[in-house]
Image (cartoon, rainbow, N blue to C red; front, top):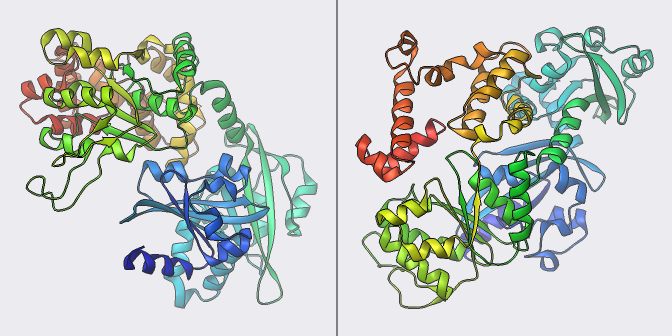
Length: 567
């Protein structure tokens, strides 16, 4: 361990709370002193083992932030997490170190956090900035929370609580707790009202709220007495919307035949059966489908369902990497191998050792590199750029493309022998317009997630607007559907999405065959550019190279614009 790493771990050892550091493969490499005491273990006994050996099953199935942190670089939070019977808050974030990317989890007792909030509240004039920071943390939590101080004043209400109970912060903050109880529309449950008035502790108490549309909404309440230094206590209220919880569980059980991939149509059932048959082993797989159909999601599902699930999954987009860098990206390079190679670099094949390497947009790979990839697949070994040393690999390769590779072979753009080598197990993903029975399920899956992201309470889509979405052609497939829903949720001013919330983003499609229509006057430059890219890709059958040439832009620039516009 180098000096910088030692300093890093010394700092972590002195931070408050439990600190667990794991690799991207979920292997523990560090646990601080507080963690060793709490879990009654020693680092040397659990190092390089799965974090599941010390953290309870419920946490992994319900609260784990690993995937959220892996997918983006934002700090992730969760509150009121049950870890070995104790209530914790969890903060997770990525750290880049000489040892690679690490994911740090910090567990803090709920009592400890709320105690800090209370202390800051009592001295707000002096510590108002700190209080604001804690309030921001509470606002990030995806459950409803309300904090009442020992003087019966509501001192904190997070954003999610507003949408859950239908009461704004301005109506209750710094007012008497009794005012909140009057506004809270609990249906026919005087016992609960009395318990809350007396600030009694409740555990998983079921009740009904009258919603904004006068509908009955079942909720689960948990309340906690938090003792303070004045021999009195504060009162923390947690409210969970049972419909949301049950909906998430139902969608997961009904709609995910493959982890992360939503759909139960006949086409998806057939693909699921194929995935079950090929999930193990090292045979190469070729996934073909239009942009936005979920090729990477399927490949990740194969990895998660198979025997390599505990090994790395590494994704590479062949279209997004400049041609002169892609060989180094895949196979690594030695120091001094070329101008700018100031240090040895490990390639994606080595990073995915024993796991799965996903090669997206394989049809965009330069012919020269196709030759080297074929040799790697045949001989199970490769050389870094600038080296003659053979490195053995046991990495499974899953490739994907939105092109017709057989046609590309005939054109001379793709090696015939590599095509046959990749196409051992072909999987063809249907476009969304060919599995319309999955659209409503996708909408029901995306809306709760996107609503929570923007702290909104969107219950669904208005009937006529839903019918419009079901009949829409979705040239951009699932990715376009998600972008449209996200746009609509941002614009929505009620609890139900309606056509006016998202029709602006769809104007482009409605004028596809009317280039001179008056509707085009509403389109922005971005709309027109997106339309031009879509038409060009359709004209060249999805070839990024040909489209980039027609549009007179670099292939990587075209790829970035496609990602930007959800194509």
